[in-house]
Length: 542
Picture 1 (cartoon, helix red, strand yellow):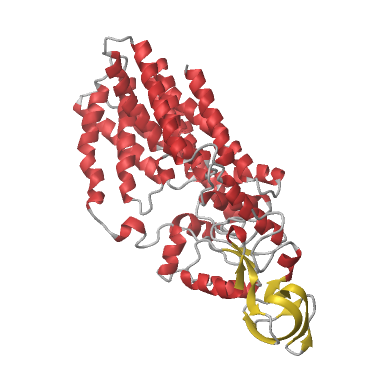
Picture 2 (spheres, rainbow, N blue to C red):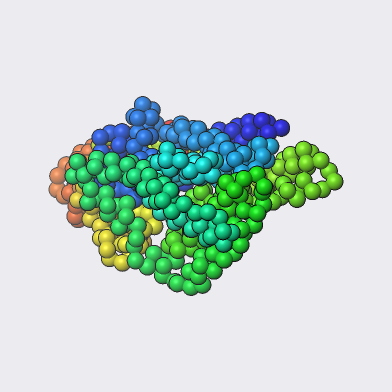
């Protein structure tokens, strides 16, 4: 039955890799991976506010796959092994602390939790971050503390840091749990070995700094250490960001939770007669889980992916209580526990289905938009998007318009120069995503809206008549066309050509021929099937 549940989870994951809606973080990560694959150095050549290891490791696959509208699907499938590893590690932790039968069902149920299942379906740094975190927890609870185990544990935490600096919260939760265990050992009058603890701490620290130090050395050797420090650390600490603007009772939840966590930890220590290590492992998982949850109250922006490390530990904490209660009923545990697990899996599956049916392909919306942008542009053309939605094209601005950047723009710490950079670089294609109202208004005045939220440089000039005046801010090669018939005449006193470079400023069109409305349109888009009057793109619009 457990094997059937595992097969169902994997089958569901594969289906959702093809159909699940694209989160805005995914193209941001994919654009950085594309940068690595094409010789660009993140932080120096393009902006990112995440640690670099995950994107760096994914870049060979991106280079192998090439430029395709379906790129999200294989990249999602590439992180499927991390999901399988998550389930395996949850099983290993459960087996070390409870029984093998319980561990199997805890892994299946944890993997089916809707938020965990759906967020890990997406292509994001948090996929690898969660796997490394679970590996660290397994190392902490699955055996006696030896020098080798301590060093590998530190190496794993260092890899966590190299994938996401949110690891600071994880280390704080582990530190809180370890301190709680030390307090409980003192209360229970268990023997403490300070020298051994210091030796282990030194080995953990020495392992933990290796990967971050290597990465720092790499970026330093490429003259990008200052930009790396800003993007990964300084940028993300924007003043007055999110919940930092409104201090309140949530700031006291963590300290208030500590006595409760200590009490529950003490119950875990007393919950087994197997060995002190098993009881300590149970207490460590519970206190790390609880402290991480309450430490999140200090984060300014808490997102769904921030709960990925918490959810498996929550399952490893709550499910044993449920299984123990079921074991005390008059029905055999070998029947009750699988039945209860099957019911929970069914409920999770229904919830996931309600969030998005596996038959509802929301991926095609993203692929259509990306396909239009790629059709209209060359690889060296710039496209103004919010967070890298066009993946394979550079932006005219350095910044990604994510939440922290937008807050820094509001504070005046980062210039809002979208319009200026687009004019300066002659950017003729834009995606209307996360633009500020003033930039949206300018976009509407200088661009024509197409399908898929793609905008192309141009302007509707109105119904054809003999003299028409228009203005453009973007220098580029344009065509002036009518809805029907061949358009002739002059522009600024020169004969009107099929296409010509038009400079920014005011212009006069004296037209003859043509019928219906007249439009100014970027020639490259016109030649590639963009209809300036309907916004549709031949062969791509639906």
